[in-house]
Structures are given as C-alpha cells and as structure tokens.
Length: 273
Image 1: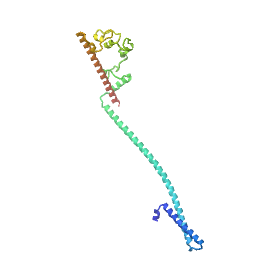
Image 2 (image 1 turned 90 degrees about the vertical axis):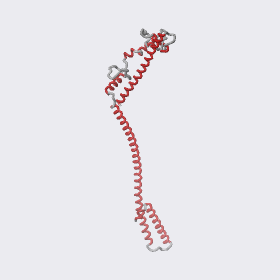
Image 3 (image 1 turned 120 degrees about the vertical axis):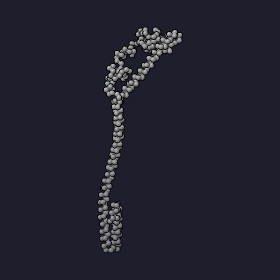
Image 4 (image 1 turned 45 degrees about the vertical axis):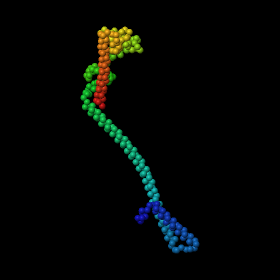
C-alpha cells in the first residue's frame, strides 16, 4: 500500500488501463475458443469478468481523483498569477519608497543647511532693527545704493532726491545747445566742468576755462605744451595735477560705494536666510 500511495495518479491510471487491456484480451480469446467448440474450464470466464469489473471500478475512482487534481491545478495556476501580480505591486511600492526616501534625505539635508545658515545669521553682529529699517527704506524708495557718508540712523534718503537730480548735469542734458559735436558738450565746457551758456568762474585757472574757440586743454599733457612761460607751465601743471587727483578720488569713491553695497546685501542675506 505504501508503494501504491507513492505512485502518482497518472501512473496508477496507466497501470489500471494496462490491466483492463489484458483482461479484455483474455475475455475475447475465451469467446473465440467457445466458437471453435473448445470449451474453457468452468468458472474461468466468471473470474475474468469479476477482475474486469474491479479494474473498471478502480479506473472510475482514479478518474474522479484526476478531475479533482485538475481543479486544484487550475486553482494553483490562478494563485500563481495572483502572486505574480502582487509581486509586481510590491516591487512598484518598493521603487516608490526608494524615491520617497531619496526625497526625504534631500529635504533633511537642505533643512540642516538652512539651520546652519540660521545659526550663522544669529551669531552675526548686525542688528536686526537696523537691517529692517534700511531694507524698508530701500524697498519704499526703489533705491539700490546709499551715499558714501550714509550711516544707519541718518534721516536723509539713501539716494539722490528729485531736486538734486534736476540741479545736476543730468537734469540739464535736454537743454544743451547744438554747437557741440553730435549733441555733446564742447571741449571747453567739459574741460572747465560747466554747462554751455554758463560764464566761467574767474577764480578757476585759465587752463580749465579754455578759449572761445573750444580749443581747451583737456589733459595735463596738452596744458604743458612747449612755448609757454615758466610760471604758466607751473600753474597749468598744478591744475593738471588737481584734475588727476580729482579723477582718482572719484574712482576710489566708486569702489568704496560698491564695497559698501555688497556688504549691506550680504548682511541682509545672512539675516533673512
């Protein structure tokens, strides 16, 4: 019985079919002998029929078992497909979890960097009240740079007023005469630092006033031309040195203005972020 139980349903069905085939063949041979008037032994045909019926009963039982196993096999196939589908869903969820982990790690890193910048800003020596006041002044007036001598608490506006702009050279650009070159100031006006139509200041040296024909000395090298007297050359050289020093001073002021504006913007950034 243990050996029979170890066999598969397919092998058992094949074995029963072989027995049915052998018994059917013996039964047919017995019928052939009866026709040839050779009588078989009494009871032999009955024994063969009983064995044939027994094997047929076993075959029917094995067929029922095979049908049940077929149904179980179909259910197993359906379950395998369901398992594959669930496995695909699990892999998709795993991929989404990895993406979420990457996003969270990036957010945590950025949060740590922001906390570091906040701590660094808190340790700064710039007063928040002064920064807020200065930022309010800049935002309210659309200004980008303060004067060189402007300090926190100064009631003046950190940008040129409308009256100052109109009283400067830029405010008179629309009223320039047409005797300049391409609408620009003549050479004598540029050299003297005045607008056209204004009378030259008698206190200024002659080298900065220029002649009526516009042939003014526009550089120290032209003012110290050969043929002039010694006193005139010394006076013109001294005036040229004043002009050069004035230009250098203006350049230094521009550099300082840029540096102060950059320092203020850095302080605002550290405080806000």
